[in-house]
Image (cartoon, rainbow, N blue to C red; front, side, top):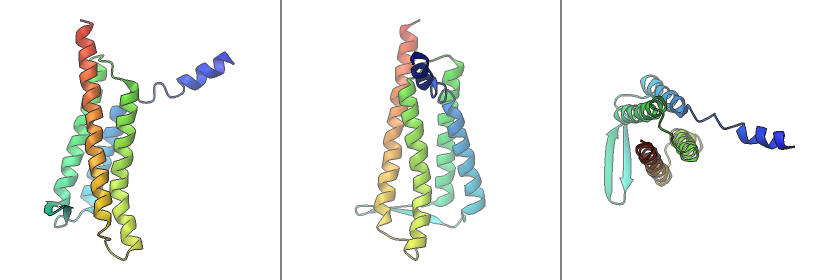
Length: 155
């Protein structure tokens, strides 16, 4: 019975030690999707109250690809420098970021199928998803600062 509990506890233990791979795969997937699927003249309009932000979809895709590559590089470099990151914060950051990025990509396409074109009420949902992704990056920053602080404390 004791070994069974130990086995259950250790089953997911090493799964997020290579969180950088998830972000690199996400970055490569986004860049391939950007090259193959995005029209260079297509724009993304974000309406926040009475302000419109208009961006090229390709530039937005390129920016998110670079951000996820940098996040992957940071996770990878911290592993190489033997700086311990909190596994719970790493899992939380990785799962929330990847799930919400996928939702951010999939929801507009699903809304086009069901609403015969783009449903404008979906803009609020996309804004909230984007906001959650941005807020989740503070978990990443907190995890990095925690790791650096503990490393400096042990020197």
